[in-house]
Length: 331
Image 1 (cartoon, rainbow, N blue to C red):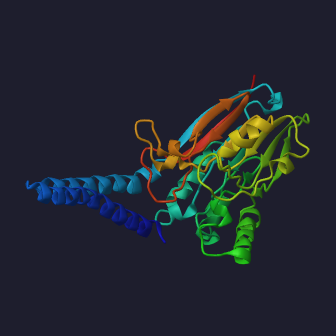
Image 2: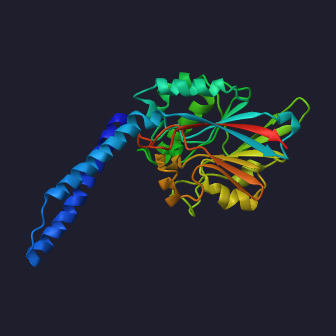
Image 3: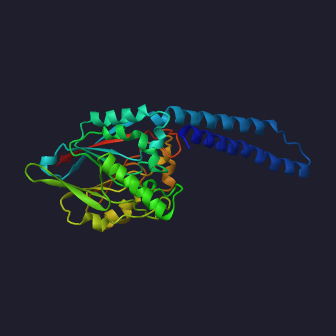
C-alpha cells in the first residue's frame, strides 16, 4: 500500500470513528429521553461530529503534507572519561527507522536527507534499524540514493523489528529467505556493515580504539509492545573493552539488560518514533515506554533514542523526523 493510500484509509477510518462518537452519545441520550419524556436536540451532536472530523482531517493533512518532511538535525556533545584522546571530536551521525516506503510519493526528500548527512562530514554513520516496514521491495528504489551516504568509516546498521518482516505476508522459511535478501541488500548492494550480534573496532594511528557493538532486535516485555527478540548481547560483546557504543533498535533493551549487566557507555536506539506525535512536549509514546526519545543517563551510562526519519503511518505532528549528530569529547 502506498503512503497516500495508507493515509487516505487512515483518515477515512479515523473520521468515521470520530463521527460515530457524538452520534452514539446522542443515541444513548435519545433512548433515555424517550423513557424520561424529554426532548434531546440532535443538531449540537451533529455539529460536534462535523467539527471533530474536520479537526482530525486538518491535523492529518498537516502531518502528511508538512509534518513528516519537517526534518531536523540535532547536535549532541557526548563527554566521557573513557573516550581516547585520539577520538576527541569523532563525529557519529545517528539515523533510525527509515521505513523507506514513507518516501514513495516524494523520493527527493530522501536525497535531501542523504545530502544533509554528508554535509555533517561524519566519521561514521549508524543506522539503528527498521529500514523497511513490510518488505525489501520498499528499499529497492532507493539503493542508489542510500549508496550515496559518505563517512570516513562507512555505515553501520542493525536490524529492527520491522526488518524481520513479521508484519508482512511471508511465513516460516519464506520469511527467513526474505530476511536474508534484505541482509544481502544492506551488505552487498549498499556496502553497509550490518552487525548481527557482533562488533567492530576502529583504531587510530596510535592504536587507540573504540568499539561498536550491534545486536538484532531485542524486545523486552516490560516496555513497549511484543515484537521479536533475536539479540544476543553477550555474544556481541565478546572480546570488547574500553569505550563502546551499542546499536540496539528497541530502547527498552537498555534498562532491561545493558544497564544492569554491562558497563557499555553509550547506547543508540530508535523504534519509538515518539509515537509520531508531540504536543506541548508530551508524546503518547510515554504510555508504552519509559524512555521515549532523546538522551537518558543512568549510573554512568547513556542512552540516546533517535525518533526516526520515516513513518509507519505517513504523518508526523510535532515529533519531527531526526538526524542526530553526536560528537565524542574527552573529559
